Length: 145
Image (cartoon, rainbow, N blue to C red):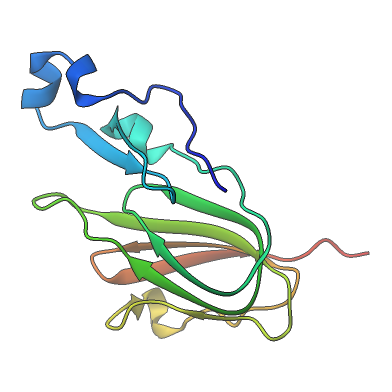
């Protein structure tokens, strides 16, 4: 089970009134549903501990949290949880492909920067970010053996 890092995670009651009023708090939720809050800048740096290899998985991810998987194989479907109204919500993930049969399905309506989704290659690592329905990705090739 993945766990949320606890650096600077607080309940709402632990923030002072000025912090609550300026709207710079971001909710952070781990896959187990535990909710905490961080300031916006630290929320963008939130990492989930790498999860074990997954296959044939349906995953719902929260906005403004970077999800990191050691490896993904087979068909994986990502669903986006509802974001905070009035905020720009970014959906982020990083994973290493662990099979030639890997495929990734994102919510419908996602458009890829430059028009092309990645062509996933076994052993390569990908980082994907989706903001306002536009996805961008980076790819790191597997080390040569």
